[in-house]
Length: 55
Length: 245
Image 1 (cartoon, chains in turn green, yellow):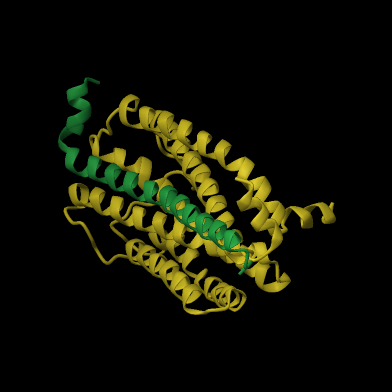
Image 2 (cartoon, rainbow over the protein chains, first blue to last red; image 1 turned 90 degrees about the horizontal axis):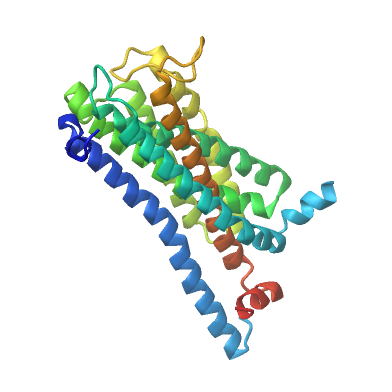
């Protein structure tokens, strides 16, 4: 397979690459979202502990 | 043995051991994905009928399998949590829902993009597609119910019941292509007499399926850890775990 054939996907490039693109986006969101939420929660808990209230 | 398992399932210990496992599962997922994609997109030959469009299969089929697998797991673990009142089980079940919904969404989107060039339409209301769409709605309903109830324990119990009732959709999806005449093709891998798919296409498919499984394990552990932190936020060990870094 040549690079041109690979990108062209036998004329199905639009369908194949969109499918893979959507998969990339959905999977990335599933990884990034919990990391982001965990960071925010951690920051909130640290602030809370710094105030010394415990709650 | 039971005491050991019980200890592992306590939120505090879960937080510790899952934190150590996540990087390994994440790395294994990435490696298998790269191998599977290289094999599926580059090495595997084009299909004699479908040309290169069949390569959508390498994400469509694993995503669809996972959408069913995660639902069964979510309903099963939810029931365990419901019956034995295990906190961690409730949290794992809750964490399954958004990931399973993602897989169902992905299966529908990629299937649609595959259907257009092969069937001439993005969507058709046939048994397989409709029952998979219902599965996506079941996931979304599960998440909505979970977030609508303030108390997490009550929410977990309510969602578990919904999950269990909705499980009836799973065999319907699986057998839909046999019970009804649909546009969707019948099973080619899990069927009597073994898979009817050539090895050069089966291998990348199985590698991608394994990668999707590992991806699920990685992300469900991440989400459950977050859930543990949120629910146990006021306990001493969480303050310690957070303050230590």
